[in-house]
Image 1 (spheres, rainbow, N blue to C red):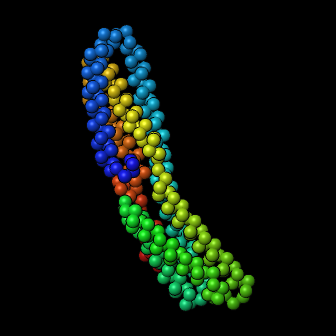
Image 2: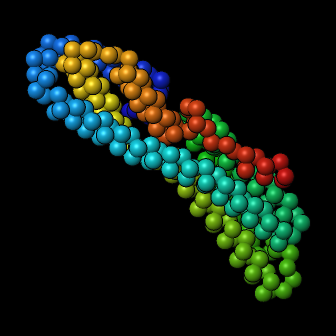
Image 3: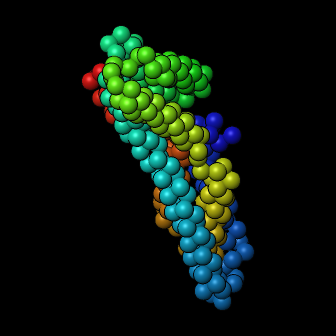
Length: 260
């Protein structure tokens, strides 16, 4: 549900709820907290520090999860580019005619893998790119498993070439599966809901203490909460590399396409 909702809508709703909570907290603190403020000041301060520490811990934990997933997606692009290069090198073992056909299919495969990365938030086009890449891979496999397509004259040499090229294609397929799986691995929505609840709850605690002190100061409270909302935005954005500010770079794949 959260992944299908625009990030700006989520953060806007969170800001609205935190503002409403802060204003309500200040009023409640002014009305009910001032009488006990002098006797309970240390307790209020400790509760405020505890709520902020808990929120900071959850923010750090969630940010690390989303950033590490983003790094995995970037690394897999480089890994796939290396796997494609290995297949490209292995095609040199083929006779001229099947080699030309295989190079054509490999180029089509490469274009579809770039398309898979750059289609944006479009599940239909993304699925089409996956299916087209798999079809190209199947044709590459068909060429690779035909022993008569190899240029080596000696049986031992042909067997070694066969093993190297087919293994490169298996590795390429494995990396493609990993990239597609990494696309859907995100920070659990329950963690994001907990972050929202902590941000709103911490805003309420800060506002209550501010109101109970008899000197409510909204500016520091709003600055802290805006910074929290900014961090939550980055956490969500890291998990949406096709929709927000954080975009994955197809440079390694495009460089292979340029050289082919």
